[in-house]
Image (cartoon, rainbow, N blue to C red):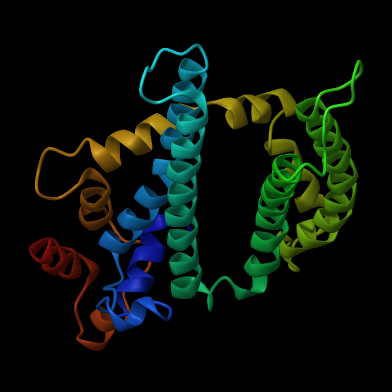
Length: 263
């Protein structure tokens, strides 16, 4: 596993066409380190775009922008966030299309749909409730609740119900059996479990954002013609030998040198 073996696998594949209709206007994609760099950049940009839009929206709520009032800023940030989400999802879709064969045993498509369906459904659900307020279907209740408070309560209640259903689906979609090796015995499985560490340690790794900052520096902070991510992949020792290197009788170091000239 890891990124370097994946890049060497992608290097052996022919160029991949974009999904229709973009395939009609965009050239085929050259798979490899540059492709992985673009995919990571497309996903990572959302991590910074979404908080920035939220901060701008909160800042405009106090009428700090004379031209861009809160409703206009809300519409602008919604547009930016939707474009950012679309770019990130398209990058993930391209990654899936490029790697669907080796990762097929792990059932990536059901896992992806199980997560993204929750996000998209809750988003459009909130959009529908907001539209109901605009159309007068949901209106203020005098002396009790405003339309905005009713929408928030309905949304929260529905999300609680939907998360219960999603939790049951995730139990089957994200089964631990996908990652179990049939050759492991009971004693070996217990040993691996003990080596995994404490729950608090893993929770700290989940909330630690240093990896995001490191990825951002590697992706956007490059000062040379070849970004650090590609440099690490090309200059490092490969874990697997590329197919064309085997056919041509070349070793991995020769392949690294040839790839370094391509960048």
